[in-house]
Amino acid sequence: MTDAIDATDTPTPRRKPKPEKTSIGGRELKPSTLMMGHGFDPVLSEGSLKPPIFLTSTFAFPSAADGKRHFEGITGQREGGAEGLVYSRFNAPNQEILEDRLAIWDGAEDALSFSSGMTAICILMLAYVSQGDVIVHSGPLYAASEGFVSKVLSKFGVSYIDFPAGATREELEDVLKRAKKQAGENGGKVAMIYLESPGNPTNALVDIEAVKEARDANLKWDCPIAIDNTFLGPLWQRPLDHGADIVAYSLTKYVGGHSDLVAGSIAGAKKWMDPVRALRNTMGGIVDPNTAWMLLRSLETVELRMQRAGENAAKVCAFLKAHPKVDGLGYLGMIEDARQQDIYDRHCLGAGSTFSVFIKGGEAECFRFLDNLTIAKLAVSLGGTETLASHPASMTHLSVPHARRQQLGISDSLVRISIGIEDPDDLIADFEQALEHV
Image 1 (cartoon, helix red, strand yellow):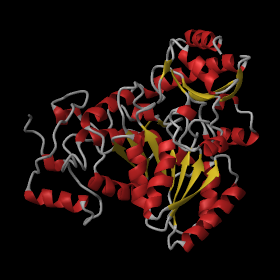
Image 2: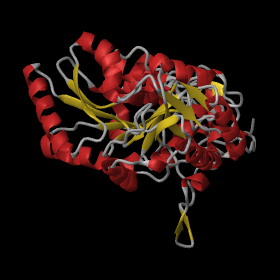
Image 3: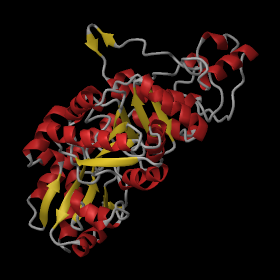
Image 4: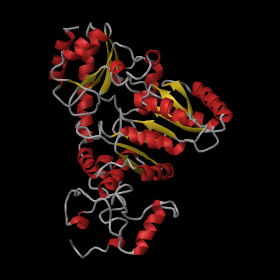
């Protein structure tokens, strides 16, 4: 290794503190440009253009005083957090480079990476709730997210109130008033407003701006608005620009984008990240270095992949909409509800490539359609390079009680489709022949 670098000169021995240039000739640079190379200095890693994979559990301190100072930051005895690498349960090079770049995509001050999207969501919620508190959340949610709130947190005295995704400002005011009353009776507070928009699997949108207005008018304490933006982000929606405080992702999906890894993240202002970071330090759950490195690779093409998939989805949905065996589509490019269209126009930058299609009939008809697909694969997950199709009512949302599924619009006739980057005409031919068996 080179002797030219003094490890005490930089916070960690391979990072650049921020992008060197954020504009050129008065033009603000886009995230896809700012991110490229951000957080990594080749000079500090033998000139390697791409970051190596740092497979180590611990890091050598330049001095005992440095070690003490880093632990003062890690344990919260000094503000600012660790100023260097300490131990891979807390921080490590590949993970920190990844977090630097994720923050750029969402315009966030800070970001944290996790071993899965659900790890990110669970640690996020645990960091903010106490006994007697209430979580207010939108519906539908991913089944595991809803189950964590209703079945796990409830065991520790945390309750919840939910509201439909398209709720208006007035309806949200009423929900928050009820939540405040319930929290007061339980000796707690409204600890978090948790959103999923678009909702899984219906694509129902939440009015983030209305949620923020209702929060600010009714809750006179710090109550973060967190949102799972997996279906649209980071390309097609930037929730922090519309009033959310924390944005969460299953990085397994579009950011990873190749169906070969599992990871998650959250991003937001440092004041919202610090409590979550402290709990992650204790519980673990940080993404491993190899997965972080793969995500760094994937981030470089996320815009290209999402754009191609979005274009494909528009063509496929135009075909499906006209098909006689299709009862309807939950596709953001073909919204029929005025309230949902208004939210889309204000919040979204694209319609995405994951949608629901309602097959005439029920479970049996959906199964015949799914079993006869040839290009599209019958699998859960979404946002990969390949097209995937699944039946939420009997798969991802099977654990949700039947009555609740019906309330949320997750019917037996709903098939969720995630369009990949194959040739769109080939995909249309595949869907056409599969529908012939219905």
